[in-house]
Length: 258
Picture 1 (cartoon, rainbow, N blue to C red):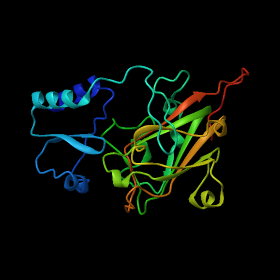
Picture 2 (picture 1 turned 120 degrees about the vertical axis):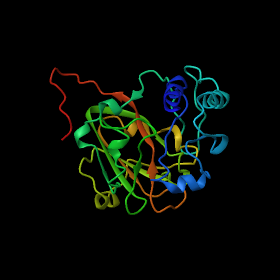
Picture 3 (picture 1 turned 90 degrees about the vertical axis):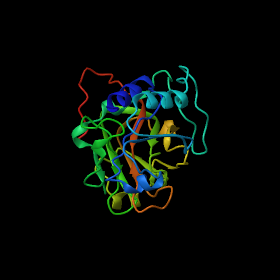
C-alpha cells in the first residue's frame, strides 16, 4: 500500500502541497495531465509537470518527492513580491493564521456547489488538504463569508488553486463587516479592496491587503468575480487569512458575531 507513504511524505515535507484528486469526479484534471493508470503521482513546480510515476511504488514515490521537494525554506525567509501585492514573510512576528478564530456555525458561501462547499476547506469540519475543494455552482462567481469570533486585523490572504489553474480566482473584492452581504448588496457597495490575482498568486502565495483598512474586522466577505481561464466554474483548493487578534481592553468577554 502506498497511501501510508504518501501521508508520511506530506508530514515530512511540510513546505510542499500534497493533494489527492478523484479523477472520476474531476475527469478534466485526468485529461489535462493525461492520467491513464491508477494511482498516478505527478509533481508540479511553477505550473509545469517535473515528475511523474505510475503505480503503487512506495520507494519510487519517496525518491521522486525527495528529488523535487528541495529543502524547506529557512525560517524568516521573505517571499518575493508580486504584481498584485507583496507577500507576507512566513514567520512575520505577530502574524498568524486567523482560521482558528472563525465562528464556524456562520461560515457560508453563496453559489457554492452542493458537493464542494466552503466548509470542506475552512472551519472545524474541513477535510484534510487535498481531499476537498470549494467550487462554484452555475457560474464563476462565489461570495465567501468568514465571520470571526472576535475582532481581528488582516494582513494578507492566501488562495491555492493550482490543481486546475484555469479555474483559479482572478478578480476578487474584499468587504469587511457586512455579515449579511449578498450578490445584490455587493454590486451596490464599494469594496474595501479589489485585487486582481496573477497565476503566481493563486499558487498559495500570501497577498497583502491594505492593512490600514483592515484594522477591526468582525467579518470578511470575499467576492470572486471571475477566474483565470474564463471557465464556467471557479475552484479553490485551500484558503487562509493572516493577521492578528485585536485583544479586548475591558474585562467583558467578546461575543461572537451573529
